[in-house]
Image 1 (spheres, rainbow over the protein chains, first blue to last red):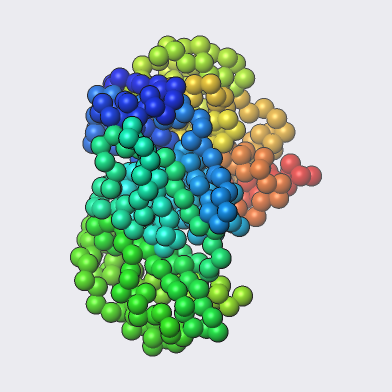
Image 2 (image 1 turned 135 degrees about the vertical axis):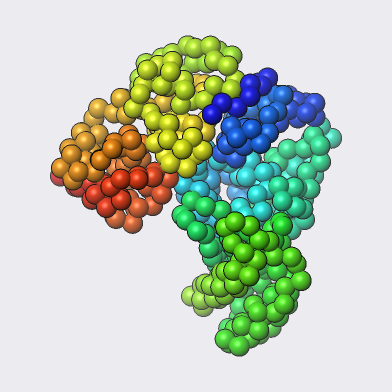
Length: 280
Length: 153
């Protein structure tokens, strides 16, 4: 399958890339979502600007209690280099697609593409990560919780690119659970948890969810039900089984009812994983 | 645009259209027919090649993305590890129709280069992105583990 031909813009700097994006060119990073979409002719852009030409957006920088991850850093690199420093983002990166996809796909591309069932959003929301967007007007910080606004929709404005993603080094305990039909598929439900506990009592918890709703969200209703409590089975069950006000999606991979069950099972698994880790 | 790319150790300077995919550059321009087009949707891994030493799906890269980089296909593998995989594939009957085999070998080759004594779990994890519709994987996994033993022997 050939994509329709297009005008290729090969930028020599971020400024040149931003100008092209401002003028309407579609940004191409690792291409693992964009190229399949172009091959299927779901989109046929007039012009494409190749961000891979800008090598200085591929980095992981340590800043005090955080890591700044450049937009063009591959999932493979994040999975292997942040395993100790920020295990939740590393785990999410290692769950994406397969080896070949992780070697090309980038965090900036994945986040900007904003598939509602992608692995990163759940983890970024749970971590309280910040997406730093750049445009000709400067740099803007967007909390992950407000970044994903709809299916394949983000808080990015026209002319803005993801420049880097800032994640905290996790002193807290984390958990991640994902349910898929087959190994390489997107999640039917994925839940990421960051938790701190003292003597078994949950002091702080944040939960990110992908795949279940029209866009990734933070599960505040579960968090609120768990803070200040020991996670006895009935406490956890009540929190997880509470009514969900958001509309659960239904698609050929899973009905609404099945997806809700999968979500509850994954939530239990991820919360208990983080809770167990907090005791070590 | 004009790209410079090293394929199997040979430097090429080629004019490509933006929408040319790497798999077509390798097969149709350079005649490297070990690189297969299977699903053509980034699932099956029959088109797997090494880009700067790492496995990627050449159906899901534009040719221009290989500019300034090196590509290795099955034709370019000729060291002891490649020979060990070839031998173990024959001994374990790890190919039936053979369509997935080049991609399988590229992925296994990269595993053996990055991990001296891979476990069965490592092999399974490595081959998530390579589909085989004939042998059902067991013989392929067996061959990969045997090849690892040949290399470390």
